[in-house]
Length: 202
Image (cartoon, rainbow, N blue to C red; front, top):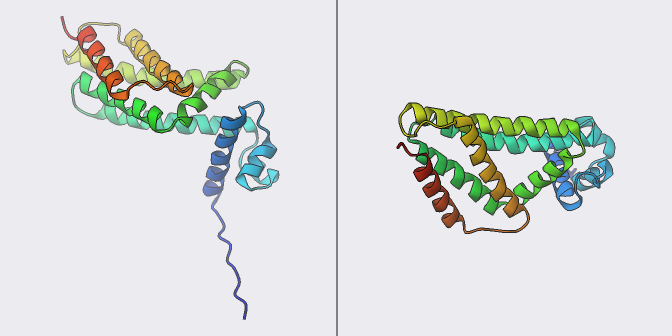
């Protein structure tokens, strides 16, 4: 008697994750604008209708991918913000985390570079990236303001300093995106010294 093969049916969330993983590969290989829904469906091994069942448009797929990157980053930042400890230890953890992430997965900075390029042509995506940038800055500002209140920092413009620090992270991310890989340990150490001496109480 011939046995029947059992097909495992994926849950809607699992199927959506399958589509997102396939779409991310397509965007990295072709860029956003050159990628078609047909490409995503083929990479996900689904019909185009199956993709549209979960996502109404390519833009919504891309937004979901950007949101996923943001959620991973801010979850770690929120954890650090909630921890007790001095400013330098917190900032060192943040810097080390992001540099290690860029070095371990070259596709992450490359994907965000594609997102930045896309924002030049797509206003809704540009607004989304601005909101994400602001969320990063708000969390850094919270760390700096607490450090000032605790006497670990001299009186500085916390928000402006947060923007400067985020710009530093963005610059490192852009470097990794184009294949320039600075020495991770030296980079973190130099940044630690720069912040420690530049922001310490007078």
